[in-house]
Length: 168
Length: 168
Image (cartoon, one colour):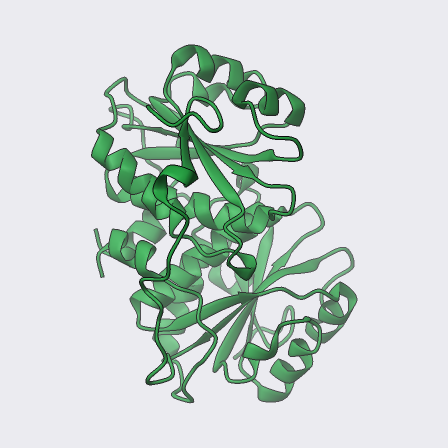
């Protein structure tokens, strides 16, 4: 898919079919995350791939709204070292979700509200935390991908030189 | 450009030529940011585009390492409302940088360490802050785009089911 199309049509979706994810596709998704830039090139993240249903269920209990992990066929936990920044985790997760979408996979980022719970389930080192879990799966047939979901108008998003200044 | 190629070859670069950025290209970059998902679909960000050299210089003084704003031909400040999360700003910024790269533009995210300074320069409402400023420009001829810059090995980035577990 063309990059612009992949970036602008990717929507966060939470319903997946049970069709498994091809290993090579999963590897491309992970590679996309790995190639994300990071502050001072520190590469503060590590990715834990979860496919085991029991492990997935345990992790789902660590987030207040992490139920979509149930039907997900795989999930990638983006883990940050003690100095890692959530902004960089956002970059890596977005890379993964764009490439997933390019490969026909739906995805949704899920927050792990209970940090200690997540740390224990994944066996993270002291000081690390899960910035986000990206749920992945083939879209459930019939699920609208909401590609035309409204956004606030362009003119509301964008201002020029100073906040709220409407003309370039 | 193919989405996978755009995502995996994008590097953060800080040297730009003085060639101006086409308005339509800039619009596509902003549209890419606008279409990024966000927690609870809150769309907590607004983008302030800076092209005025004086405004750019003022903003550069608000970050400890924001000098690359000097040669940038444009910059987009990703501003977050009081409840906005840096993770979501990372998603929006990454969308913009991937599409910029797809259009042949180099970019680099720059942190505004002095929040009050940035807020004043851009005239942000109370409680808002600048999550990041994305510097944009045509690559300076002869500047290596470091497309083969090393990353930690794939096997170090990725583990399976639990942190540090090396086989799927």
